[in-house]
Length: 138
Image (cartoon, rainbow, N blue to C red; front, side, top):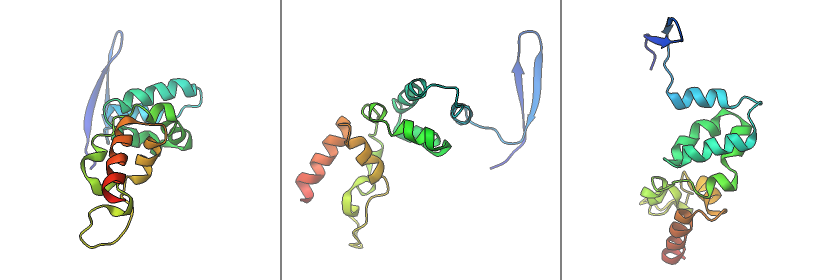
């Protein structure tokens, strides 16, 4: 969706008016600037941890930014405490073998790879839901 808008950016002594064609959210703006190679990996991982405290899907823009962003998100210290409850709301999204597909097609859930990356560093939510899956399906 493209639209024109005016952004007013106050500075110390003057107000700058900028015509903007595409507005970005704050997280998109920050992510686009976070791939700056001068940021330390520990600082970037701390930012990723703070983003994952709200919801795991907020990490999507950092994963898509570049390989460095992806590697930071997949660090065990980031995924261990990530909030993945919304990922687990639909069992078909994280189940192995597609879960409860009525068609009977045994495909992996669309979020299963990310779920397993959270399971590896013992994310408590991932361990709980994987335990339930193992008990009920195997």
